[in-house]
Amino acid sequence: MTDEVFRLIDLEKQRQSEGLELIPSENYVSVNVLKAMGSVLTNKYSEGYPGKRYYGGNENVDQIESLAIERAKKLFKADHANVQPHSGANANEAVYFAWCQPGDTILAMSLPAGGHLTHGSPVTRSAKIYNFVGYGVTDEGDIDYDELERLAREHRPKLILVGYSAFMKIPDFDRVAKIAAEVSAEHNYEILLMADMAHVAGLIAGGVHPNPLEHGFQVITSTTHKTLRGPRGGLIMSMGKVSSPLKRPEHTLENVPTLIDRAVFPGTQGGPLEHVIAAKAVAFEEDLQPEFQDYAHQIVENARVLAEELKRLGFKLQGNGTENHLILVDVKSTAGIDGKFYEVALDKVGLTLNANALPTDKGGAFRPSGVRLGTPAMTTRGLGTEEMMKVAEWMKRVLDICVEAGNENGLGSHEAELKALREEVRRLALDFPVPGI
Ligand code: DSN
Image (cartoon, rainbow, N blue to C red):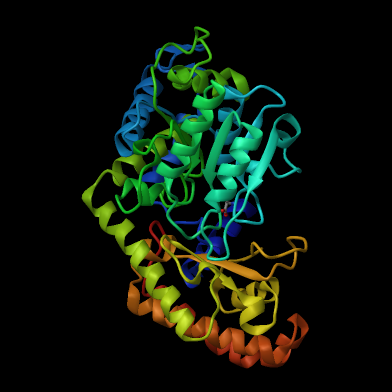
């Protein structure tokens, strides 16, 4: 008998094939990544690290994890990589745990400004342990470096974090490193510079975004499933001396790689997911190929064209455009409706994105003023700048329907138009197959 789960997976395949994925943090993995993830490696326990395991039978797993580590190091020109974090959130938490003591201050971009939940939102475990101080963005949508500097001098953070999930500029890593060096010299202590590059890691690997490790930062955390186009998981790259995680190192910047290994296991995680680590290794090898650089370049070009076309059609964009893969539309200023309503309406025509708060939003996250979208997934399917113009046009037509409808209930009287649009999106989407479907 076929399990109900497989029927639902088939429906999900259909949803992915017939719609266009505009969520900037999603992507489609290759068939080889799918194969590695669905392999017998899920049967194996391998707590520890290659050559230093707490279980027997790891001779193959050791080689697989070592391949993943070496490939990640090569991609990011890092001294060390830890490929075991189960997610980006786990990767971030492990770095805090490696470097900070309870009560230490961490300076990070605030959530409304475009930061991430795991960068100090009061609802997280980390925020109960560490003292997070948030910096914001300017009216132009860039990091407020003056505020960052003022807060660093005032609070003397143990760790400064540059990272985000809704930010469209290229950060000035050198400027942050200079601020950290001055505060550190003045007060005679070491500050860890950490970049959460989950959103743009694939752009760094593809050579179209600066690498923080080449600009004075010691640590990059990332997810592996966004622009890196690997399986769902986390990753930490670092600079410094690599020694055995079984020995407790001195707490210095030089020893950060070893402190991180100890913080991932046994500090915050148990058995690694070696089937996922194998899929990470496969994805990293794909990311090292020259075609991946073309892909990264096209992501940015598609985002630029989509942003320009949206602006031409009257959309107001946070930061007035984008320098990466991500676009934040100020739906409220554009059309007087909220982001959630627009998200729901776009879903009806097969365009999937997410409602997102803007830095100026005062209310809760449920009815924010904006929507967030991006081009990594569409670019993987082969959509180019011509198709981006079409996407912008569909977004405008749905926006006009929303304005006429007034609210979600009002969409009922526009069913025929929405259905026709749904069919247009479906036809284009089917011309660009999803890998593995
Ligand atoms: N949830 C991810 C995103 O969509 O940006 C970040 O963790």
